[in-house]
Length: 516
Image (cartoon, rainbow, N blue to C red; front, side):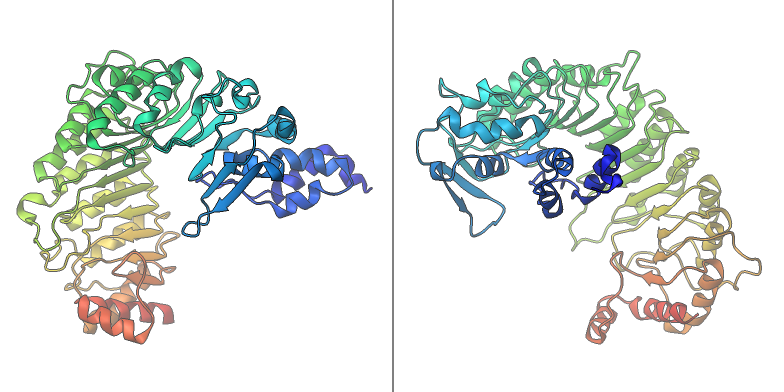
């Protein structure tokens, strides 16, 4: 054997490169290269490959791969080839689980993604429950799909005090008992995800489910990541004081927000809220210098100008000015057949300026039907305030018939002057006043994509606009009215030209840039 394979660290590194990254949906990953290494005659590869192969499994695959073939019947759904039904054909004996016992110490992540598993022979409803007597010793992460099906496996069989992560992809009313006892069974939980929009219960069961989840969270003290649909007043107050909490998503803020003592979300870095604007501004108004790096706010309705101003002002007041890196604000979509009222719903430049205090911003996304009412001076000040910006998305959902933008195409020179890292920009501007190409060389530019949305342009303006853009952004090649890019097929170009009034002019600009 080559001396390379005598160095354990190098063999481990080789196996880790052969491993396929575990997918987000937690399905068992096929690793043919690792499996081939494990089957070699050398124990060197086996000892490093097996832990990687078995570190993440679904319960369905664990049983199919390890139980004797004569004790179960496996059927894959013809409609969804990643779901299955596993039916036990005979009573299971302890010797049937010998292979599971062998691989059990390697299992760190377990998921229950399957349509149905008939496991009454060793479920917690049976006095001879096998998994309840033989816990997976090194399991610390579970992704669970709790169905109404009586044949679903029992979560309690896999809970232990060592568990630090649990994600519920679905929850039924039958799962309330497991949720209520979760804090007692797993007091060290750090990463907890409850379903937000896919609870498998009618509306009448949601109140009991939310109450059970709130009760569970009041018993957890080491949370670092939490995703939850709704919290009651007491649970929200408890979560706000957990010193280790780094990431929080909550879809419904309590109507009565607790008056914060110190600390109040002392270590929170990522916050995602789906709420009404008044609840959000009231919540942020209670915050004091929260060290957020990422902030995402979404609303189901289009906010008024005053609502948006209060939210932006509260964010500037309650969030640390030096920590913020990414700010996203999504105002809900309204009826596509109804023209939005720009006089009362567009985001004012004075409101947008509230965000300029976050000097280290790298990503800003503002999406609404009416967009931001920018002028050239505001764009200039924005570029000066955010010299580290990499992605800037100020789109207005591509509604045509909007008022002509007040910002001119010449305002883009501010980004060429002050924002060397900007690589993706979406905003609307007026092209009627065509600026001359830049005389001075811009600072090193990374701009590759410019999304112009509803920016008006005539075909006759394409040449001077392309010359200006090329002088300001030498790397720019992709100019589009849509984030996904313009079509290249001739028949699609004709369709887009009919559907979008400004398409042909901007398509011509793109063609000219590619030739420069």
